[in-house]
Image (cartoon, rainbow, N blue to C red; front, side, top):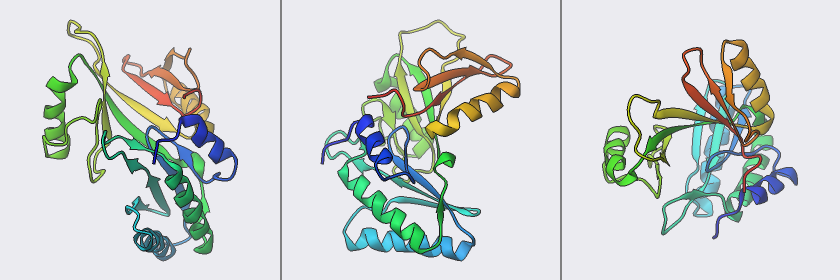
Amino acid sequence: MSALGVQDVLAAIESGLSDWRKLAQPLVARFRSADAVSAAEFAAAVTREAAAFRYEIPDIRLGPGCVDVTLYTVHAESGRRQVTDEELDRARAISALAKEYGLRAVPGEVTQIELVLDAPSVAASGPFWAALLTGDPGNTPVLDTIFDPTNRVPSTWFQRTEIQPAPRQRWHVDLWLAPEAADGRIAAALAAGGTVFEDSHAPSYTVLADPDGNRVCVCTAFGRT
């Protein structure tokens, strides 16, 4: 299946997938549960359904009072993580299971952290960070991003730059949020001492700086293709 564009995914969310949000690569939902047993039963039901239809088991994470479900397809040739029509169909089925098990969607709480490194050469730096972060230098960057196959650590995106003299900030965090949550999170960060470094690309991304000048990008799927 071919990857859907960001606008196609956003249109699907608007037309009936309100439990879900598009983040950097995947489609993500968070469901609140009244107790740990119902959360675990829901997670088991999602797993059984995936196995019955011979889908890949989605990334399901149980936390205190919540279950996070992440959907994506790994492209057979490029290795990129992408959203296809299959993810949309699975998202609808998972939302139905959530209702069946008494869970409540809280899409504004979804979050994804992506580490970003300014790098003039992905080929030179990629194997080092793949070995360090995932334990296997064979998990080399897929074009420009390292993915841990078991999702233990955030993805690492290599932002191509020219060779620059040190010192300079070369690492930063991309914080992906549900679009409706971004303004509130930015306001909270500003109230806590941060500043807006650059916002001409908002709501796609807004660059903030902490009191020491360290930068972070607050990202949403809005304004992207």
